[in-house]
Amino acid sequence: MAEPKLDPTIPPGLHLVSAFLSMEPTNTLLSLSRECGGGLVTEGVQRFIWDHCISNEAGEKGYGPYLRNFVKRLISEVESRNGTVLDELYEQCGYYMSSLKDDRLVKGSARVHKCISFLFPDGCEPPSCPKSSNLVVPLRCSLNMLEGDTGCSVWPSSLYLSEFVLSFPDIFSNKSCFEVGSGVGLVGICLSHVKASQVILSDGDLSTLSNMKLNLKLNQLSAETDVLERFGEDPNTVKAEMYNKSKVKCFHLPWESATESELEEYLPDIILGADVIYDPSCLPHLLRVLVILLKQKKAYTQTWEESCEGRLQDAEHINVNGASEGKSLFAHDIQCVNIQNGNRTDPCQVEELHGGSSVARLMKCPVAYIASVIRNIDTFNCFLKLAEEANLVIADITEALVPLNLLPYMQSYNRSSIRLFTVKCK
Image 1 (cartoon, one colour):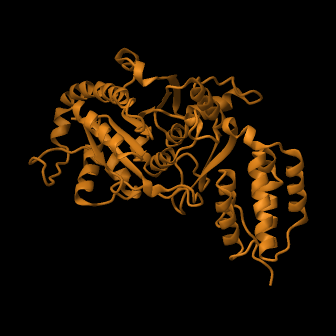
Image 2 (cartoon, one colour; image 1 turned 180 degrees about the horizontal axis):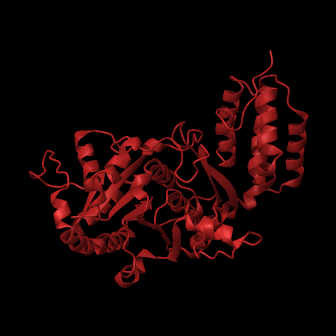
Image 3 (cartoon, one colour; image 1 turned 90 degrees about the vertical axis):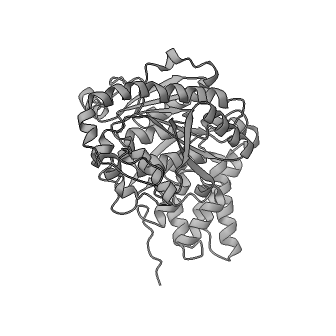
């Protein structure tokens, strides 16, 4: 009986190719390979891997030591089950063994190219990709997550915050968004795809900032929107494409030296941060930056609301436990109500929550979304204490706003370890 042909555009073939492009650990690739073969890495699965991972452009541009390890393990997997290994895989393994140097000498400083594929469920299309069921984000990043190159690595909270942005596009569409500690720029790229009106990315490390700008270019975005930068293309075509993209700005922002005058030109509607709660010595500076960004818009909001007093009187009033009779709640307050009541918000209902009602359209108070893995409870408690002293209100919305699982192939990504918080001024 002939094996069913694998399709790289639908699971399980899609998951295997996506895992390979994102440089998932070899154990993940082998697990997905077995899934493609009904429990075994058959000759058909090997041929699929050869055609769509090894011998094509992705394989040619891949990181040699990663490819070598995968092919070696793949061969061992097949041989251990008394299977037949493709000749092409033996030959490729021999090539890797003879041509690649000891990667232990370069692994610490190695920069690699990987692609993060966000796979949308059927019937849920990404806002900027109406003809595609997935969004592929190429990134240049580091293999070293800890030793001095943290800003150029892809961290779990960054993946989670990106899923959140893509799952709830109406929260961010037509909003000015400011990210602190932007790292590789993944969240910013996703913000651009959901058509945020402005995307402001910042980082305190100059090498990270340089790498971030390269990633923006890989995704047809530019920190300096110069339509003549893409050679060989019709400037009018490029200009039209960029007109539909968010404006993206990158700048150097060490938290410890950030000043109010430096940040006062930005009036973001939304502030974002992924894995920024990590070093107790940095937390006072982070909180000071958040306070500046959150409070700037508050004075503006009060004036704006006064000019709209008549419309506010007509806004929907929502009563909940603990709320004063007739108090108007903005959309992000509704999220907190859901948290208190133990309810979840469906991504499909967010358009109504954030754009459909008169209350949502009047939402002007800025809010920060912080995704973080709580690795050290003392550090997190320090963050909470400093936030309280700064008159900030923090709410855990992890269970209320659950993003879609857009990375189903990424077995190394533990979504359950990540918490999502909102931060607002009192």
